[in-house]
Structures are given as structure tokens and as C-alpha cells.
Length: 514
Image (cartoon, rainbow, N blue to C red):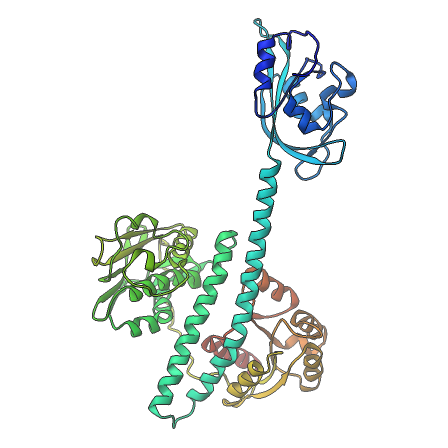
């Protein structure tokens, strides 16, 4: 125990022995903030002994104090001073102490006034819990998490790049009318596997978004039936390959939601994919939607292998994979149901899983709030049958030559006039000579990147009318925001959804010809 005076606060040797046994820095001060006692842990935190009953160390005045953001804390505003001034407890304040040797310690500071029998404040007892190592570990985890997210984003980008020319090549070959049945089957298999790879890449990105709380919704008034049809289309390959009987029951009257149609369709599609994955050939899968009061209920039910009772409470947890809870190994990253739960909850809804047990099938039920009244009947959207409208002048820019050349070949088959470039400077030169109506522009280009190309094109008088479409492997919302800021009209992620691209080009063509 440290030497101190015989003030009423510290004259009690039992009280001092109690403070010495604490696994934390402890010290006392009188009503004016003069230190009257400190234990060995406090000395270790401070790095030197303060002067007892000396104004130079009033409120630890000779020690530097900081908040966790680096802002210096005036000593007359520290936790001890505030506790004495207000005569109230001051607990759990995270601060940083700088020792004389420059080393900094992060502590949780607590200060409690001490009173005599009449209630008069005699001073305060202060406790400093050293959490430096905990903060270092926390910072290391944050750094590792950032590194993991950056790695997943780069990995997703690099994996998407080779998928783009593969899908384009399949589309080109599919236009041949003389393919043998074996060749047609091979192309279909390639297309299915490209789609599966693209879905797995999206799952990789969503892992980072879930763990860093960066999932975002773009809500609008949507028709439930159209969302479910989109989900069915996305899951079509799984449903066909599984060989199950698939039944869809949609509501007779329109039901509208305030929702992100893409993300909501993704949630339903994940449930359909799971049902197809875990239901054998000849089994049955149902997708049923109905209004329930002021809510909508979406049910995905199957006659598959079911979920054991011990696993059922954990099916929505991250990385809970089918092989751990069901009878066969069918792949996947184990985040599909976690993503479903997160997306549904972001829409203000709930999702529940039910199963009578092994081999008894599974039921997943989504409840979502529905809008009170439909906004009126909508005209059905005609499907785009062609890859792109004819007679558009288009510049395709990508340093992956296979990606640029295959997309150029695909778009030329429908009558478009195409030029290609393979770096940023070449893109500007070709654009200046060619004056395209549409530029399909990769972001990660050599010499100057796609953002800089877009900005320079927009500065040209003729470039202000060009439709700029980012074609990239970067899919995060921050990437889309950067594209918008650079002047892009649209941001498409590789491998391209050719139907969506056709719709965009069709609107450009109509606008240009009107």
C-alpha cells in the first residue's frame, strides 16, 4: 500500500487493504481533488507515483488524459472532478491515460463520492479498469474484418471477370440454328453452371455485407405477384434440375408492398433453391402467397428431407449448412437462410421455419406488411425477345479482351455498330472519333480508370448525351454511388444479365429515335 496521510478517507486501514486487493487501479481523493491514496495497480497504470495531497496532482493534473477519439480531457472535467462537483456516481467512462514514457493505456473509469454519516462528501474513490489489451484485440478484429471484406470484394470482382466472356460466348453459340443435340446440351450445362457460379459469388459479397451491416434496400411500391415471378425465374434452373412437382398459388387480387423488389425476390428465391436442393425427384414443392389481414404470408413448403428438431432453432444462423443438418451434401456457402432472415426483417417482416423432423419436409413462412390499397392495375410489361435494338452506335471498353470482343460479337448480331477499346486512353480516342450513343465501360482499366473516362466524356458537349453504362465486377452500394458521381447512367454487374441489358438498350434506342 502506498504512503498517504491520515485523512478521514484513508485513515481506515481496512478500507485501504480492501482497495489493495482490487484487480484494478484504485485511488482516493479529498473534496478538492487532491490524491490521498493509490494502490499498486494504479501506480502500474500511471507509470509513476503521483504526489499525495499536492495541488500539482489535483485531479491527476500531471498525467495526460484523452478521450478515445484523441481529444484531450481537461482535468477539471475528468470523471473524478465531475463526480465531486455533482456529488453523483460517474461510472463506465472510457478514457486514455498517457504515461510519462509516452505509453498509453485505455481504461474504464469509475468515480464514486464517499460520504460521512451525515451525508457530507468527504471525497471520492476512483477505480480504473485496464482494458488496453481488450482494445488491442478489438482493433485487431476490426482490421481483420476489414481485410476479409476487402478480400471478398476483390475475389468476387476477379471471379466475375472470366464469367462475362463465358456467358457472352454461350449466347453467341445459342444463336446458331444448326447445333447438334449434344452441343445444345453442353451449352445449356455451361449456362446453368455460370448462373450457379454467379450466385455463389453474390453470396460471397453478401457475407461481407451481412457481417458489416451494409445491406441496403431500395424500396418502392411493388406488386407481390411480380416479385414472386422474378423469384421463380431466378430459381428455375434449380427447380427444373431437381425433378420435383412445383405448384404456385398466387392471390387472385393484387397485393402491393413497400419493398425492394430485387432483394425480396432474392429472399424467396433462396427458399425455393433450398427446397429444390433438399427434396428428391418426385417430391413436391409449393409456393403460396395470400393476404392475411394487413399483412401478406408467403409460404415455401416441400416434402424433402426435413429438419431435425435439434437443428431447427439454428437454421437461420450464419454458415449452418445442409450437410450439417440434413442427410446429404449439396454444397452452398451456408448463408442463404441467414440472408433470407436479414432481408425479411429489413422489410419489417418475420420468417419462421417449421418441420416435423427428419424426412418430414420443411415449411418456411414469411410475413410482411402489405399496403392498404392497390395503386391500380398495371399494364403488363412485354418481354424483350431480342438481345438489343438495332442501329445503335456502341463503344465497348474492357481490358479483358475476351469480355470486350465477345460482347461486341453478341451485340453486332442484332445490327448494332460496334467499336472496342482496351484501356482508358484508347476509349477516349475512339469515343472522340466514333461519337457513340452508348458506352459500355469497365471500371478497372489500365492507364486511366473507368470513372475518369466517364468524367472526361461528360465534359465533352457531345458526351453529355451519351448513355454511359458501367460494366464491372464491383457490386457494392459504394461502388454504385461512385459510378453515379462519375456520370454513369447505369451500373451493371458481370456476368451481364442480357435481358436487363436489352431493356436498357431498348429504352436508349426509343429515346434516341423520338
